Image 1 (cartoon, rainbow over the protein chains, first blue to last red):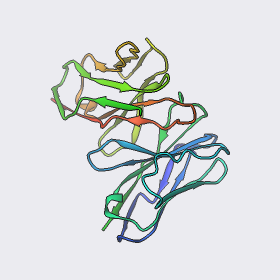
Image 2 (cartoon, rainbow over the protein chains, first blue to last red; image 1 turned 180 degrees about the vertical axis):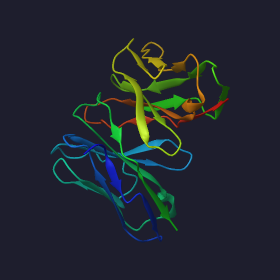
Image 3 (cartoon, helix red, strand yellow; image 1 turned 120 degrees about the horizontal axis):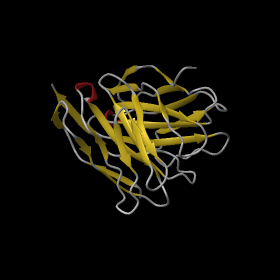
Image 4 (tube, each protein chain N blue to C red; image 1 turned 90 degrees about the vertical axis):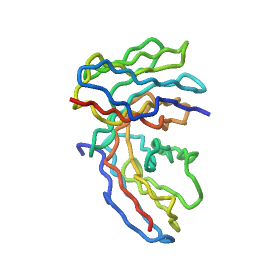
Length: 114
Length: 113
């Protein structure tokens, strides 16, 4: 595809519900990243997938957060039992292999937990 | 752990003024350094990057030089325009399996005509 796409663009949910966020990376990009951007703050790294290697989950804030990736394509980020502090913009990025390569970001999913 | 510190905003300048946004970092290993920009209503996009010491990244009139001795990557532009109004993020990546970017908190730049 032309760029990284994410869906939905906006999600409003009630506290305690589970949500799933989807990311379609740029075709051919082996690396995929999830970040969180809370209002007025910088971006926080959540999780990183590289090919078939075990993902780097070091940024996940709690065990309510999990992510999967199917091969080198679509990824879903799942937040279970959402809390108000989970409200944020969730950004996905993809890149070619190698940490020196540019990460290309999607438009984000704005999550609001009521 | 790795961290990026950049000047807090908002920074307000007049059109054609000289711009400097300071960025310093702490990192294990030998990081790559990036400046990302977020224009109003748009997604995050790469502005420029540098992958080794003394490299200068440049794009759209912006420049930043990778200074290992001062662990800095300050963003500069000689003459800003209203269209440069945006939020600017300094970031680093150290690799070694930890390839996620570590971001600064962002600097909101406002250019007045």
